[in-house]
Amino acid sequence: MPDSLLPKRFLFRFSLACRYHDPLWGAEGATLDETYRLVSLAELEDRAAPAEVRAAWSEAGLAFRVRVSGKRQAPWCRANRPEDSDGLQVYVDTRDVHNVHRAGRFCHRFVFLPGGGGRRLDEPAAEWLPIHRARQQPQAIPARALQVRSEKRIDGYLLEALVAAEALTGFDPAEHPRLGFTYAVLDRELGEQTLGAGSPMPYQEDPSLWATLELTR
Image: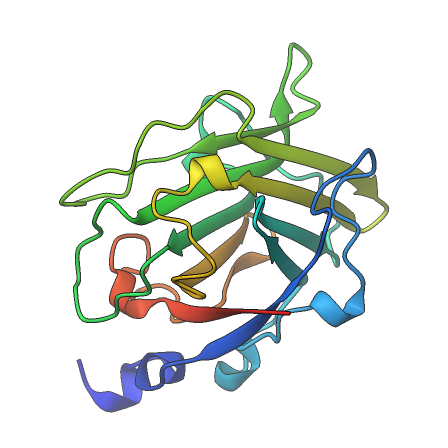
């Protein structure tokens, strides 16, 4: 692939601070203010960034807040088709390894949808998904280890998500305060927004393409 066709984010290794927040989750979800916002790297390639993404950590796990704006259509979500749905996909490597191209047992993929669940398909949904071509999969996820909350907005939606520590094989902030990390906010109307290199690079299965989250206080 010629250099001119390579995504600019492929040429660099990015590290972002992820601030501590306790408690991570409450009756109103993840109440993360502006100081928890992750810088958008999509502008490096002159791509639109319709989603604002915030992240936080504590010993209890990881929390995310996503505000998607600029929509004219309702998000398309189906809990039984999570990979095809509009929403947030999160990729986490609790060992922050960047010199391998296939996921191992410390690599995780989660999907959070603003709708598509329940009888009327109007409830948010959360699920663990296997990573394609992974050499090993992480440990089984306990019930209720994933939490999700959503709100409809005139021009989009607000989505809040919790990944409990029990859902993250090898999660140990004291010993391993750096996580391999990327996200993808997928939307049939607005397109794909990723943190690191996006399509056509195979970020969905290659941890070497992920950025780093530094767990700070």
